[in-house]
Image (cartoon, rainbow, N blue to C red; front, side):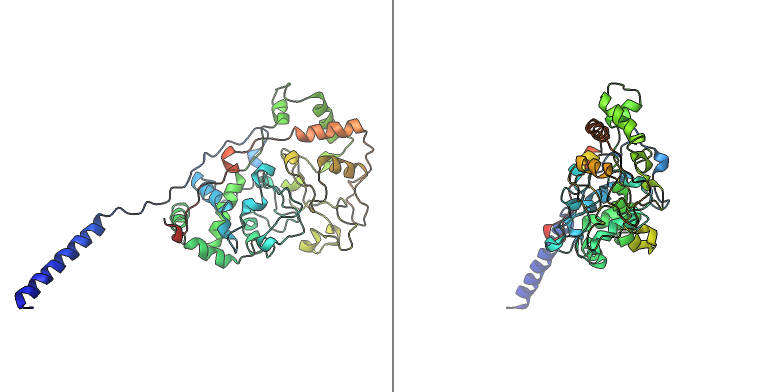
Length: 363
């Protein structure tokens, strides 16, 4: 090949290269992930905003709720990608679990029923035994639990950091696209705080709608406040004393087992806390079966019968427990009142949102 042929070939190669570069420059950029931004609802009828536990360093914003919503429904937080927060906190069951014990990675089981998340923003502590003071800490607890998500927090963070759609959102919400466990906890906790149930028939009755409930419900509320003694613990706008730190109760559940779950005692080491657990809300209780920390009672009727006989006697039984001697009609009225506490949660929160794809799925 002579000089002129070589020069011509080089010119053609240069032109081809420029054309290729031009094509790349003009190629459209891959679109960024567009998260669904939910409408943050007003506080529903019956609840009190002054009772909510919101840390100063984690205010509620729509974008943060959207991010937490995605993380709550994302199985990539677990070791094998199969278990999400919503796997055990199912929206149609007051964000609780209809099974006695939740199924984790590799079909492992724990020994406690998943506590419903609704209105957890009104609790002073989290988990049945109150071992964490905030929703931010609670949100990360299941990740490393070997019978739940069975992951390591560092591994979860590495997985999320590989997802461009999450990095762009963490940048927008927290000011850095580098995903941290602290910010994951903040995002999930923010979503959980807006899962609020209110505007129940009983709330509407109290607000002036005298047709909202039946006479049986009214009689049931009188029993709740009086003979049945429920309001000693199921108190306030959220029908639980969990709004106040340090209040846990041994009502005898599971204390007849060979090795009973000692509950709050494991956290504090205080003898008086043996077998004591946090009081769950009565709101949406009709949706959150089974009941008690061990899921041992399948229906609200069983719960009422358990209280009627004064619980299971044991050395640490709460002094508030006593034999009630309720009639069958009184039991039915009490049940009607609890059913009238079934409220409304944001409809969108019960649906899984679109999730940002992993790199192998394409951005």
